[in-house]
Image 1 (cartoon, rainbow, N blue to C red):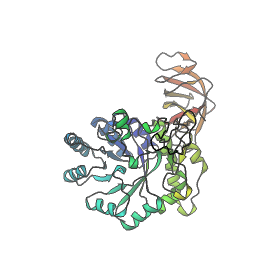
Image 2 (cartoon, helix red, strand yellow):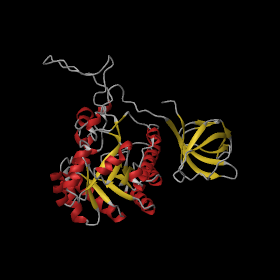
Image 3 (cartoon, rainbow, N blue to C red):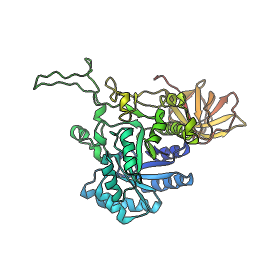
Image 4 (cartoon, helix red, strand yellow):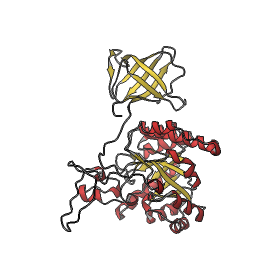
Length: 410
């Protein structure tokens, strides 16, 4: 099985690659469902494709907005440029775009977006006949139904989301954002009104509506986050070809940590399926990144997992991401850090290095500004500082390793 990670920008793409993704997916300018915050210019896409391919990682380009006629010309110009860069596949949902892509290139594979809501084998067979190589299955499907599609259409690749935020709307096709804020979710501009707080009142029929809420209202549309880390064997048994992590809008730290965990679990399973054992530390690590309470969604209906989080929409965080490693002078025991959040002398930090299995714990000694040479008590976002490490360091810390400290959000 393949592991696909989100690439919201170049930094996130490189983090995903370094921490074990087999493939990354990124947005095609203004033509993906996470525009404009995660849009790749052609220049950035060129650098990203080169970096990914240098590390034996594939790049899938999302061009899955619901397109209007005025979008087509620009989409095809972007596609032609991206094709010249060597993208490995394009993710689309529009039949017209599929036809245009197939006319323009036979080399680039076509992946059908989850927004096409493929829920049965006849649809899968139809799309196979149209030149689609892979279907990103509708999120409403159980693993049993995915397995049935696999059995009936064995030559169609199947990809599923296994982790991240879920949309409350059917296959993500939502009109709520457009209606309430004039920002279309189907055009990459979702304002996430499903995360807002609501009060329910039925004023016509007089029927009582059963809903859990207090005097402050409820988050009835607010979905929990998907997490399938405990069910790798079941995903394999269903015939899934590719596991996809959601989160192009999340941080590089989120991308790195979630990719790292699923890489470890997947490698463990693929190495010896018959001896595979779930490691509880994987779930604990996933609880350390920003998330809402977890669910298995629709995959395992017998579990009767709750899918909504009706009391709060705020994410849970277990650690503060404080920066990334730059240069490590092991002899002097000094690490240069590009800070993203505050950390101070005396803090205990954890370093997650893609080149090392274990998490390294260090204590912050003296902090020195790299430009001025001045000593300081704490570093803040955008600072570049040299940090003397308390205690000895067993190995060389790699460039771009992630650095965190235990937060106060547990």
